[in-house]
Image (tube, rainbow, N blue to C red; front, top):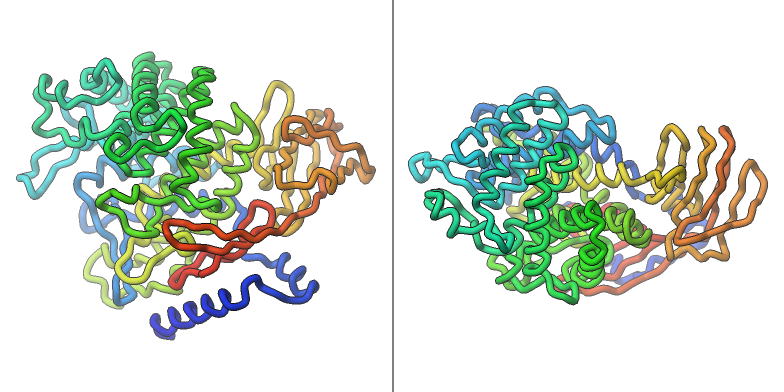
Length: 560
């Protein structure tokens, strides 16, 4: 079937759905539909697919240089493209960190060929007297430049290689990088163009002094690097940048500051927020942590839908395209919410799980999605046109609130955005079950199999959590606010026992090894109307899982 015919049929389906909203049908048909809902719940599979995308997009015609993105073309084919100033010094670190994290937390192996290529490009980008990841601009006589938007990504790359492969040069280069950043940092905590001038660096430094998030983006890798290395300079810089960015890029009420102060690029704002929240939690700074909580409560909803779609830029930003989202900031908010869930309250775990279930997992590109709107070039002219569909599987890009893609010339996926998604998925995997003292807490209601417990979540098909003890440890299971407490039934070894819920968790005493139990509850359905980026959407939910969005997308709608 021709691409145009497919789009016509999808558009027709959208119209029919809007005419018959909400969907009607007899009880048996609705119950059958519940058991076959096309929802995605396997976090590890999503991590593994994302890692493959990050290590499957190297240009064989350019010494394996990573592509920056894959683009859909008007004729239905696709091609990979490069970027110069935000290419090698940005993408390489972005690919290294989540792929190494996936290996560490989810036992997803880092592909050896990809690791070798990325390590080589990481080392070359830092091979300069300033110890900062740089690039060579072919349009300016191959002069070297440093773009400070890339510093976050560069440090993440070094951290990945130092922590994941114990490479001495990566450790040495990371400390040298921090020494240069310290020289460029003003007492107020901003990367300063004036200081660059005094150091004779201003002529080849880009992006200094533009907005607070230039330095704020660095807090995340700085605090991660400190926890690995105990380098006091990393903690010092993280504190300076966190305090300066919190003061400048956000208002006292918790809103995102206007574009002049915040830059207007939502991912830069939210990646700063995730780092500041991590720093506040590490330092046990309750005042800063409370400020981060206000931002999640007040600022995030202005630029995000209830199911997790996030706008790319502010409305007055020159790059603004209506309903062009970006997955990076979805990942940032999920990671921020996970930190708040651990240190502030379990309601933030619920926010993270809602965004995971209803936007991050469903917006990942799978082979069946890509085949709906992409065909491979019959006679590719080079590696940029070869097997683009297959190499894009597992990727993420710039979705609409109801669709992974927009018609016409549109990015299919980018490596740095896919990195942000995989980073968040890895942290979600890590946070599913946590230990506080001798208590195990099930924070995210996904499947889990660890040394102490095996968990089977029936969500979103049924309101049921099954558990089996492998060790004699107390278990707490997070109960979302949307669960009617009067409907909860708890059974242990086939016997009903009283339900005890405190501070958002159903609390079970220490269980003997081999004990099995279930938590059952009513799964509520609801409908909602919401204005997102100037368009009204009608949604249907079950628990925290979105089931339907109207109007549906026309190219690659989310799978509900």
